[in-house]
Amino acid sequence: MTMHARPQAADLPFAARIDRLAEVAVRVGLNLQPGQELVLTAPLDALPLARAITAQAYRAGASLVTTLLGDDVATLARFAHAPDEAFDTAAGWLYSGMAEAYRNGAARLAISGDDPALLAGQDPDRVARANRSRSKAYVPALELIANFATNWTIVSAATPAWARTVFPDLPEDEAVARLWDAIFAASRVDGPDALAAWSEHNAALHARKDLLNGHRFSAIRFRGPGTDLTVGLADDHAWCGGAATSRSGITCNANIPTEEVFTTPHRGRVDGYVASTKPLSYQGTLIEEIAVRFEAGRIVESRASRGSDVLARVLDTDEGARRLGEVALVPASSAISASGLLFYNTLYDENAASHIALGQAYSKCFVDDGAGLSEDDLSARGANRSLIHIDWMIGSSAVDVDGIDSDGQAVPVMRGGEWV
Ligand code: ZN
Ligand code: ZN
Image (cartoon, rainbow, N blue to C red; front, side, top):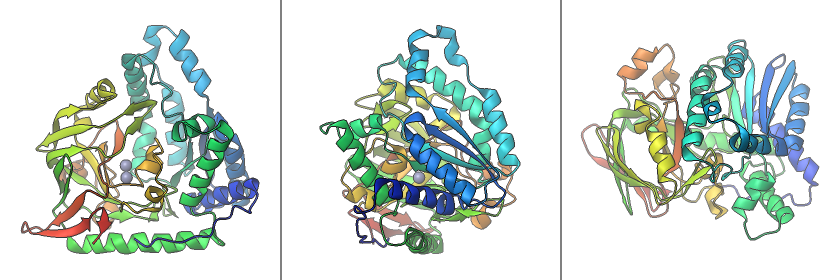
């Protein structure tokens, strides 16, 4: 992948950089169309970015922006004071409403900036029940997002709680400023022309994706410390990466930033063992040093040095939670990896290293964008189904990647974490 040496725009006032990020989110991330509605979710601490995005959305012709703010203090109040049986409750009405909005053509934008360890001190059983009931209630909306029914994107905001986790030794103001710098750089908003930088970046990702598609590999093999994993690919799989076109016909970038090319594994053809190369921050809990073993696509052994109880509960969410829905390749020298930071945030950390995802597959990563494939067709090709989709990082400069041809020959794809 081409790396860009971009001048820092430290001379730009903060508000101008926020506006540029909002513009990238709306123009590149969503490619919001005139007359479209937008459903926006954000942490309370991301209000300035949420407002800048709202303004950019209306300038792009949005008909209505509906913003839902999440509040960490309110979440903790539930764990402190709600009765035990409350943790099986979720706002199903809300997610049904979101699904209706997407079916009617609304775009979706999520600002992520959650406190990575918000729920670390809470009863893991309650955390798991709350997550599970939320995941179940979320299905109608998640299916439309996973099937790329509408244009959607995720961007991040540097909230104080997140910044404290990334920079524990800095005063809070400085930590927040440093995290914003990292977000602006990774989101390619600091150069002279952010929209042009994104066109160039998308072209580079498309070239990489096309190269992998040309090989028609049947499997991808990862080898490194604690890892020898062969990930069989779904029949008729296609590699995805960079801007893609939703089923509603709008070309957008679902993640800002993005550095990955990715595809759909076969849910029954993953074998071997793998060790995580970065901690996984999962809905408020950190899971560290994950090591699992796969047999015929299914995780049959798992451990973690921290958060192993949460990991065990995640794997028990449903049958598909023990199987893979995504495999993604990211060079160890990606712009985000080059920052040298651990972000404790999937959007950032998954774009710093090759990764796999437990759970739901994206129906888009098939020949012809998976158009016209029913759930049964997808299943017959090996696509996994689950309530969850959790990315975790398995790549590093110590990990080699081979593509396996249909005749079993290995073709070097990455050496020392870099594209061959
Ligand atoms: Zn990914
Ligand atoms: Zn993923």
